[in-house]
Structures are given as C-alpha cells and as structure tokens.
Image (cartoon, rainbow, N blue to C red; front, side, top):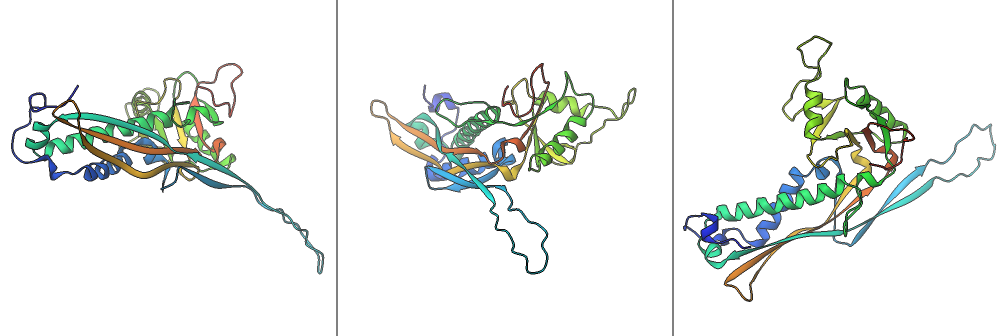
Length: 290
C-alpha cells in the first residue's frame, strides 16, 4: 500500500516540505504526551540512554527514646531500585513523489496526527496490558492491589476503598483509568433509588470520582473496572523523542516516511497501583492476574 495524489484527494497547491521530518517528530511527541493515557497518568521521564534505574526508598531508619548521654544506636534505611528498559515502536508509510511534492501542508498534519495516534495507542496498549512481545510489561503483569467491585458498580465505594488501599501500601492515587462502558455506567449512577439526579456532574475536564480525574481508554481490558494510578510511583520513560525520517523508495517513484519512538514503563511501588475488578474464588490482592 502507498499514499498517492489519486488516493489522498489532496489539491495541488504548495509543497509538503512546509513540514519537515523533524517537525513531524516534534508534533508526534507533543500529541502523544497530550493524548496518551500512560503519559497523562504517569510521570514522564526523558532520557538519552537505553535504560534508566530509579532508586526506591523501602524503609526508614529506626528511632528510639534515649536519656541524657545515652548512646544512640545506628540504624540504616532500606533501599531498592527499579530498572526501566527502553523498547521501540515504529511505523512506516510510502508516499508517491507527486503527493510529496504537490500536496499542501494538511497532508503533513494528517501524517503527523496518524503517526501520533498509532504510537500513542501502542504505548497505551502496552501500559494497560499484561506482557507485550518485544515491548514492556504493563499493569496486568505487576503485583497490584485488588479491590472487589462485585458484578457491577452500584455506588462509588470501591473507588474510595481503592484510595485508602493505595495509602495503606505507601502510595497516593492521582487518577483513575476506566473503559468507555465503565465511564458511562458511573456517569449514570443516581443519588438514590428512584431519583433522576445523577450522582456525578460533568466538569470541564470530564468527571471526577472520589476527588480524582477519570481518564477513559478503550484499551482497558474487559475484566478491569478501573485502575487507580499513583503518578509518583508510575513512570513513562521516553528516549530522545520521536524521530521521523524520510528516504527514497528504491523500486518505486516514491518516498518512505518512517517514525520511531522509544519508551519504557516502570512501576516503583507495584502494590500502590490499585485494580478494581470482580474477585472470583481464591483471588486476592497483589496477584497481578487478569
């Protein structure tokens, strides 16, 4: 497949070079950071290396009460580390040279938007998934804390429970991630049986539940009602930014446009991430099961 003047339906006005490959890369990075659920819920960390190690403070040193001139016992804190490896997601498109030379800047914008969309979905698919071939492990792979939502949400108590569960495990939740179906369901909850008044109100940036913003993604798996994310302990590492390169096709009168984005995902306190789902027999906290 390839993009041509015939298939694109673009008028012949000015050159597509108004947007250079480097501009594409910047546009893609900005769009991914603005749209990606992973980027919006986690801490974004930039690097030029192939892996990043984050120090983790596990336990504080002990203290005690002493009398005058008592010898104070030496105690140490306990530390650990989490290493985040970098993985590559990439895509390539073939443009006819006529389209490259004759189209107006809208084609560049569309190409940039398309690359941003696909790269963003690749990042979120890995983030919200379990394990990804040649990619990072996601939320379903970690030892998260579970909150039982039952067969269906009838109130918002599981969200409140999740906030306290995260605190109990050393984290503070900063956002929820839900599917469109769950977002619709909680938006329709009423203040009481027989009432037509919704329990939640829409605000400028969507809805808030238990004081936290709700992010919606159609890539949340069917068994998960919600994810509670502590931004401080979940990191999205982006290496160098997205690169977009343009080079000629060998056997066709066309130009390839290739986008490459490198990123990694790290969980600095797995138990501080909370998954709301219906617990079956034998399921409990921190199992990392779907």
